[in-house]
Amino acid sequence: MIKKLVVVLIIMSMSGCGNSQTNKKAHSVLVDTTKTIAIDNSYPNKKVNLSNDKRHNIDERKTEISIKNKSDYSENFIEGLKKLGEEKITLSDNLLILNDTDTIYFPETPKINRRITLTGKKGNLAIAVTIKRFNYTTVDYKIEITEFGKSNHTQKGKADIASSFYFGDESDESEKTGVSYFVTEFSEQRESDCYTYIRLGYEKETGPYLLGKIIKNCNGKLSDIDLDNFPTLIEK
Image (cartoon, rainbow, N blue to C red; front, side):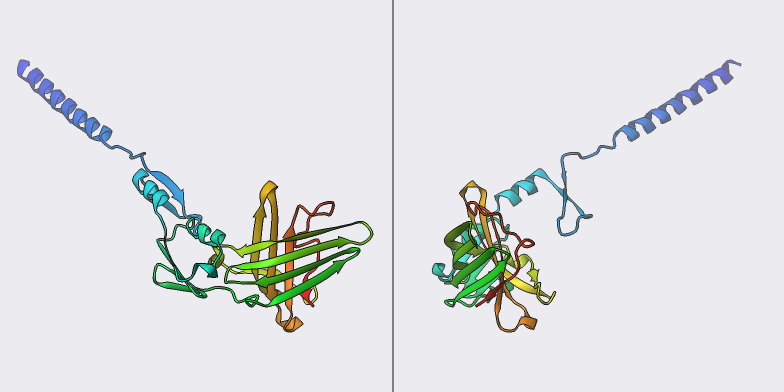
C-alpha cells in the first residue's frame, strides 16, 4: 500500500513538472511593439513595418541635386525638389533625371519666350491673362479682372510649376466641346493665404489656340475665381 502511494506521488510530481514547463514556454513568446506601422500611399492597403531607426533615416535623407544652369529653373522649384525624398536629381536643360535612371521632360506648354494673352467673359465679369514663359519652370504673368460698372483688380507676378509635376498629369475640360485636355499648372503663393494658379493647355478640337483656367483669391472687392465659376480663357 505504501509502495502504491509512493508511485502515485511520483507520477503527480512528474505531471506537475511537465505543466510547469509548458507554462514557461507559453509565457516566453514576446510581441515586438517597437515598430511603427506605416501606410504606403501608393497602395492604401499595403502596410510596411518601419523601425525607429529606418524612420529616422528617411527623415534625415538629403537629396543630391546637380544643376547644369541655375537660371533655367526658379529657386522655389529647386527648393521644392529637396522635399520630395529622392536620392539624386539632375537638372539639365529641359530634362529632370531621377537617380541617374528615370528621365522626365519639362512640359513644353507654353513655349519659352512667347508672350500670350488669353481672355474670357461671363456676364459683366471679364478676365485677361497675359503670360510669358522665360525658363523651364516659370512664367511672368499679368491678370486683369474687371466687373463692368463696379470694380477691377490687376495683379502681376511670377508663377512656377510644381516641383512634383512629374507625379502625374493635370487636365481640364473645355466647356465648348466637352473634351478634356492636358494642362501645365503654374502657381504663386503670397502672404495672407493669397494664391494664384494658372492652368494652360491645348485642346485639339478648338484648333492651335492656347486655353487657360485660373484659380485665384484676394481679388480686392471681386469674388474668388475657381475652375467652376468662370469659363475657359482663350488665346487672342
